[in-house]
Image 1 (tube, rainbow, N blue to C red):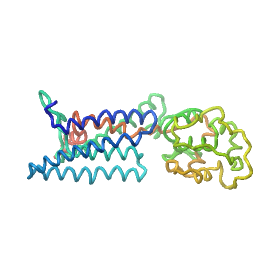
Image 2 (cartoon, rainbow, N blue to C red):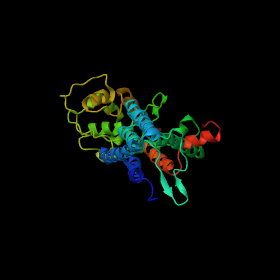
Image 3 (cartoon, rainbow, N blue to C red):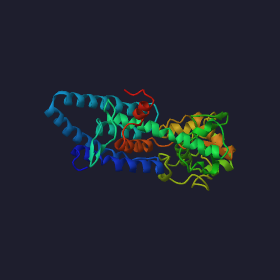
Image 4 (cartoon, rainbow, N blue to C red):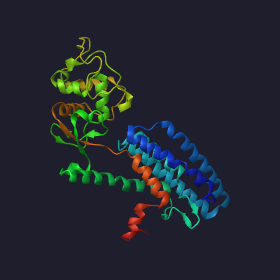
Length: 335
């Protein structure tokens, strides 16, 4: 292993960082931006060393290095930004893809006593694209596991592939989003981070809302003194599951302008905070609160963090190679 290219050995330091990011994303759905800066520096240094080596060799090696770099930084890295802008995943996921594109434009080589890793390589030879395709295939396992769990429990429906039932009193302490509205199932239900932001802003708990939905549905109940909405993470603010927060029982001052056509004060909340609340609309917030105020169980999607299958896809890529290319080879479609 120690006789492997030094820059490829350096790149292995990415693995524990991605595994840690995946663990933190499962636990908190948050990955600190500071995690990526050292990896970006690592990628720049490794690319500089490899680039100088390719220039020294010249010819086909230099051309191949240029192609790999162009595909990785010109196609893979922008994909992370585009999907983030489209709302496909979060900012941390986009940063992770950009880091991979910079650190792994080419397939690394790790020499062993009886061979080398990865075991296979694609004709294109862009390792960041291999990690991305592995990530997609690994990510497909999650819906299958959810479906199997629901099937064993006798819950058979289209939602069995994307969600699970949850007791409403526990929803405010979960991550994911609702799959229900008063009118039926939806794939664009209320984000539970946005729910916590709203409850903290109003200094309420979900138990408060369920005890007296008529009171809090009325915009007249909006208080002039509001709480800090935070970013919606569980550890970012007070628990909004049960009991009452300070100020929840205080009568609303008459100073705040009231919009009678704003049930739950949803529009007032989104206008007041310096955030999009994860793309939540007033209609989504109202529909989610209506459901949570009246029902005992709801379907929600846990929303597996994208960095989790990405970390697995990275490890699989380093050990084996490209899963998609292997599947295409099995059915005779790979070149």
